[in-house]
Amino acid sequence: LKVFVDDALVLDRALSGSRTKALLFLKRRKGSFAEVLDVTPGERRLRIEAVADHGETRSGQLRAVLKSDEKRLLEIKLGGKVELDWKS
Image (tube, rainbow, N blue to C red; front, side, top):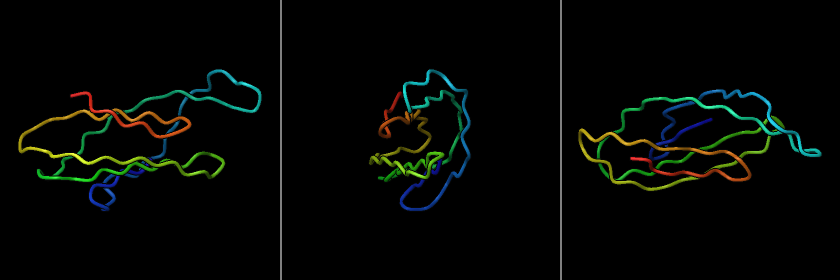
């Protein structure tokens, strides 16, 4: 999983998860992790990239206006596409 803020790489982390159901040729995994990132206040573009075991890259992006001393939680779901959702 790679996280970019305004095209600068701020996180590069391997993901792991436990295998859940296998449907025909689809192998599903489930896992979670949390990471705290300090981001400079202002208008920012966040981009997420995930590379699957078989080499396919999926990505998603969003823009946000971040305020000084503000804490926000971004939930990232990886599946057929990358889903990004602010939780706070």
